[in-house]
Length: 187
Image 1 (cartoon, one colour):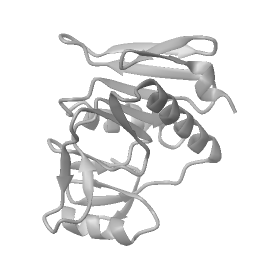
Image 2 (spheres, rainbow, N blue to C red):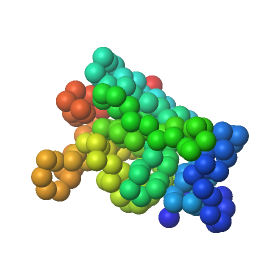
Image 3 (tube, rainbow, N blue to C red):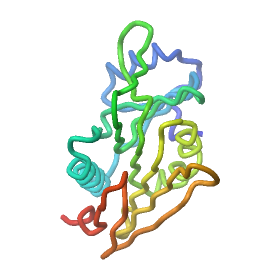
Image 4 (spheres, one colour):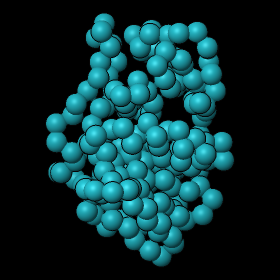
């Protein structure tokens, strides 16, 4: 189950988009059920910004990096959310509501989530299971708030997803570019 249920009645995707347009709070939509997303801490915000800035610098001219303001839609599971960061390489494939309002990315190659105490289990479990259904997704990045630690799950050409962890003083490869863990945690 997603974060906190705003309502348990069925809400069409178009109704959800109208709610999002007029709301000060972001929501997730899962096949007709709307869930309020909790606000993040200042540390969460700082790490998300540092991560997307590092990706933007590393991938300049090759890919487009999006912040948590860009919605994502998973067609197969009818799930819409706002990851802390996402990357699209090549043309953007967008999902729009029938009334022409709202748009959500369909084809990220990389997704970033900053872990918090209240979302870590969800980000590693149910949310990741939705993300796994995105055919273009190659890397899922989890950034710890409690220590300099970044985890990356990579989709191999065959077999199971590979997992890598990088800590303080180490680097990791994201979309073929080297990112220093210390740069993400620097104030």
